[in-house]
Figure 1 (cartoon, rainbow over the protein chains, first blue to last red):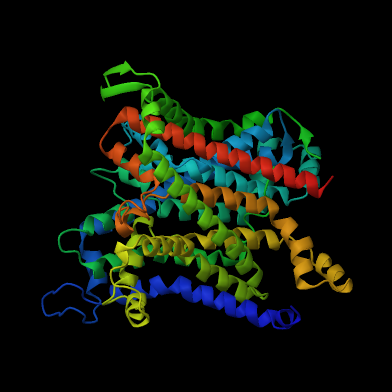
Figure 2: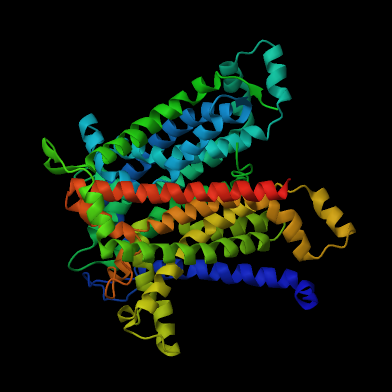
Length: 269
Length: 288
């Protein structure tokens, strides 16, 4: 035991590095394949290094549209989720009202409901509303899991702000909505960014709702990749699209790195 | 103390409206469908609990139920301790924290339907990095014929994909521990294990409950990732619960798929409820 404790620092670093290598393995594989021609093209042999896979993304109108769709529905989703989640998070953090704990649990229950279970009626409901095959439909469906998570994250950030600030503001004559708008929101900017990032992350990669809600139109990246599989799959192109689809997330991840871990500070209401 | 204020309901109203529309209404619809035989939606007739009876009476259901339970158990047993351990391993220093978190979180950015493709190409004996290494080390080329090997691949894939979420959750809880606690522990001459057991672990409790719930649900209902690895085979050895549901929905069997959905939903909610209960008991013990 003593021996372990003495070298604890080194063991920790080795363990973390080992896991990072494990994490990077499939990604390295993907990157390698993305820069190689995997199907014979003009003047290119299989296995030759090339950038053609990436230029392929730019020239394929379906793929270009898919990137546009993905960005659109994630942005719409964030624009719905954050304004709806913010007042709810404020209420859970600051007020005690009848049934608050049960309501919070009910919200979390929606997060843990498997999307497969709800696919059929969601599809019917959305066709009745006329928002199937549009980015708006996916954006709305993804609120099912993004909204509870956002409420959870935001109420953690709001709880970290001292109550005295609310009280001073009320004495100064602020109403609650005005206080939230002009004092609270500037204070929890980081929290809003973290919540938006998690919305992006869970929404960008989701496939179950994305699949059933886009049969003809409005396909996101994940579905556009699916469409690339066929009798002769250009796996290099598939990997290049996947790599490109991770780029925006990786940039956001890097920008958020110092706030990321603060999102889930306080676990419960 | 929070102020007692029932106007809180007004603030949660928008959230309830959205979740009611996309969560509650579909859920009620599913429950409704599960009692009917439906050919087309305009003509249906009442069959009562027939679909449920058929499901509960079928061996196939119980076998996939057992498989999914086993899978979830393995996943939780690996990912939760591993996630905690890795969160503890993240070094201090702003740059390193950022870097570690970014690298660890990368798998979360891969579209879910691409994850099996990535792993299959990684394991490809001719072109894959692990596959070629496997050939040297004696990992069989026909691993798809072996149930154990297929399980190993799926578990490894899931660990790769989701451990990062547990790490991020745990790490965020660890950052809330005031430095004074560690100083006090150092003065008392506490060993690293004591620090973990009496300072760090109690702080992790709430976040761990969330991590366990999320990981349990997602692994129990694993669908997009597991199926393409070996199409549920060999001999249905990796046929998990959600696969049958997916097939029935694709075939538009409204009634049976609805009954199945309701049953799965009930299982998930029951287990989630049990977890929260257990958590409550733990807290009572910790603070009598």
